[in-house]
Length: 438
Image 1 (tube, rainbow, N blue to C red):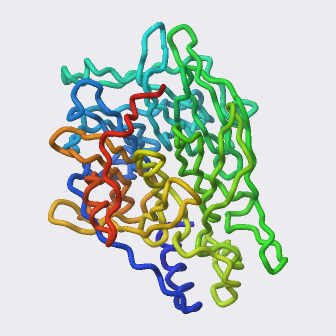
Image 2 (cartoon, one colour):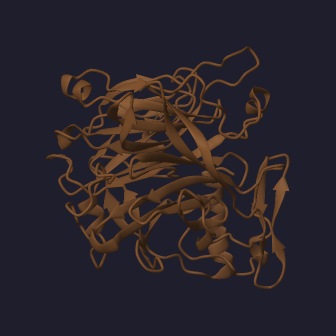
Image 3 (cartoon, helix red, strand yellow):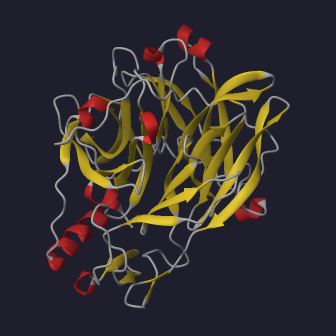
């Protein structure tokens, strides 16, 4: 379902039930990247998910890496300037699907060809692979393109059993990367399915491959408190997929946003998924729906909402990010795409909800709408972002270029988020270093 349709349905749901939406605080972005356009003239570029790479020698030269789906990847400086563009792989045959880059994340210090190498990992939805790009700090310092493809030629499909099955496009979708001791991993979700898979990265003669460590199928239907069975809204033949994910590598916990269901917490123990726990539900959880074949969308029956949904997320539940602070403190952030807000939960304990924020219009940028992915780092990034950085996808970049719809990424100083709350959130720039994977 489209984000705009979900936003309208959420508003209708609140009017019918009489529920009052929590009032988000407003924050302002400081920088935005150039808008891209999902049309032929724009190279079918559609911004989706960001990651932040922290430069080991000069944090002010850190990078933001963003996926553009069919158009591949863009790499940006902290001022939003595009530094590099990487095209998605071409289709390997006439009837095959081309590459389509969906999610991106960063791991530090992977042992590749005998050298510690930082990697940007990308879920290639088009070809059902994880692509790996080495990040070169020397190239950043010299002003050269910093990313280089180091994907192993024999990297196999993540989910599909054959190349023919790849073209059915039930393929690698969401992605979250993390390190544990000397090993690096990626958690990958499957498009149109409830499945997530844990991959361990491998050095294959100086190129990056992977092998499967574990697989988990989240529920596709649910028994409601009234005893009735409910299946989340989806196109015919599809199931309740996961996209937004993040791993708290200090706590060995995966948070996975199942779009029309809510947020799951899944402990990772010895490279295995433990029993998942649903820690928050979308507002639409449990509401009956029908499928309008002519409009190709779900129609939610708000008049018969049984009231089993949550209060903080409007479907789709999307991008997830962890802000680290000392002694297990910090926050889990989740994009509530249906109402253009971000929910904030405590990182420790039972993950109590603390409030929501929206990135609104400012003198520097427009607001953030229909956000998919997000990334946050606590460490100082030079003079540009001395208190840390939040990067959010904007699904409706303005001003519009005529009738062309644009998307981009917005950069917000963490202190702008922290101080917007009545009880300010923690600002901790020292207790966690994303480069320290030991």
